[in-house]
Image (cartoon, rainbow, N blue to C red; front, top):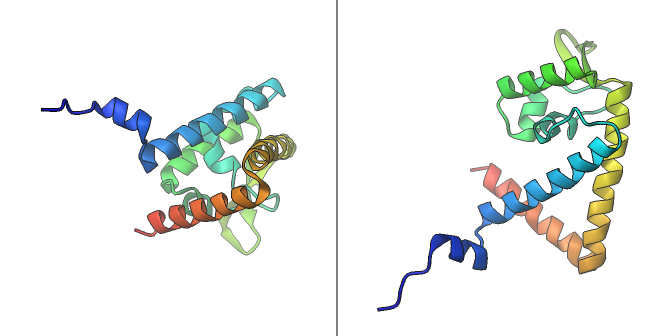
Length: 153
C-alpha cells in the first residue's frame, strides 16, 4: 500500500489557490513595505495597506474603504486611527454630506502613495518582462476575474 503524501509536500508540489494567493500577497507586501521603510516610511505595516491602497487625494469614506478592501468597517476605523496618529491621513467633513467624514491623505500620505505606486509599478514591470506583456496582462485579467467571482459568494 502506497504511503499517503504529507499535506506539506502536496502543498509544496501543487499549492491550492489560498496558498498561492497568500504567498504572492506576503511576498509583494514584504518587498513593498521593506522598500518603503528604506525610503523613510518605516512606521507603516502591511495592515495599513488596506487603507493606503484605496485612498484618493480627494478623500474616501471609511465605508467605501471597507467595501474596497473587503475588511469590516470597524477594522478600517482602527487602521485609519493609526494612520492619522502617524500623520498619513486626516478626517475631513464630506462636502456632499456634512454628517459623513472623508479620509484624506496628508502631504506625507501623498508622498507615501507616490513611492508605493512606483515600487508596485516596478514589481509589475519585472513580472511582465519575465512572462511577456501579453501573458502578464492575461494573468492579471484572469486573477481579477477569480477574485471578483470569489468575493461575490
